[in-house]
Figure 1 (cartoon, one colour):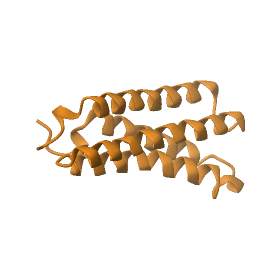
Figure 2 (cartoon, helix red, strand yellow; figure 1 turned 90 degrees about the vertical axis):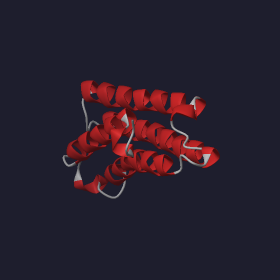
Figure 3 (cartoon, rainbow, N blue to C red; figure 1 turned 90 degrees about the horizontal axis):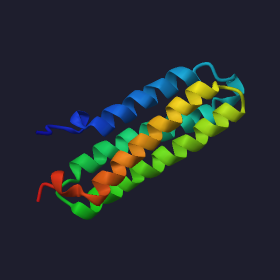
Length: 123
């Protein structure tokens, strides 16, 4: 039984990925701090925040789905920033593939929950 959003595998995966992005982005050039670095960190963290928000809205199916849809959108945005980071030479192809695949997996899990929310809805 789920006791909180931190019990969700999708939250745990997204959180781990966002922490990896944080660690990786500490090595980005200083001129990227207010653009690429900030955008990557914000969108990756927003995935987790939206999952937490969705969990609190389980009693309201439409709001629950909306918050999960927002989390999925932020995961997609994060993939775009990961692409930029690779193309700018700030990460290896291997790291790019790992992070991109991780966020695609998060998106797939969120999509399944959005389509089949009955296990999570509290009403």
